[in-house]
Image (cartoon, rainbow, N blue to C red):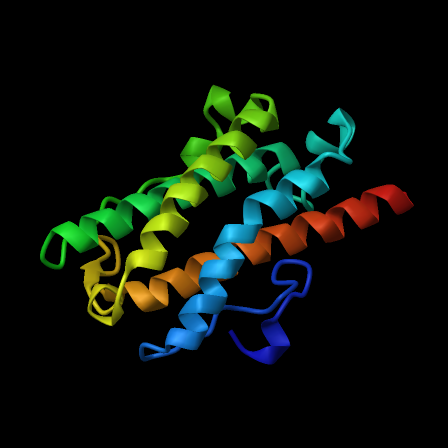
Length: 180
């Protein structure tokens, strides 16, 4: 995306930039970000009223409630993809239709279900991540839609960014909601 096409409402922390190689210091920062996300999201969400949860992130986008459920669903997939990649040789991972998932009836459920799920998944994921070595992080999987291969060290960065990206979107939407 060129700088002229960059929308700070959509990408409040910018786009993810792949690192291209294993870097233990960067990995440790990302593990810390993955570890902190459930707490940060739960703390922020404790301020929300139902009217905000059912408001759209922006015109044509998911509701805040759907976005919180999406974060839990997506990070559950990421954890599972790590496990596949650690136990299989360059697996072809399973993609999912996140838009279709966001239209299922559980996308209207209380957000506490997804906050609890995200917290549990992240605790297990962080436990796993902290035990991984450079060889583990250098394993890769193939994405079925793009046929591209992804190293786990870079995929961790994608999901640290993903969590921070959606957290920033929600914070900014909450600020806009409270000013209207």
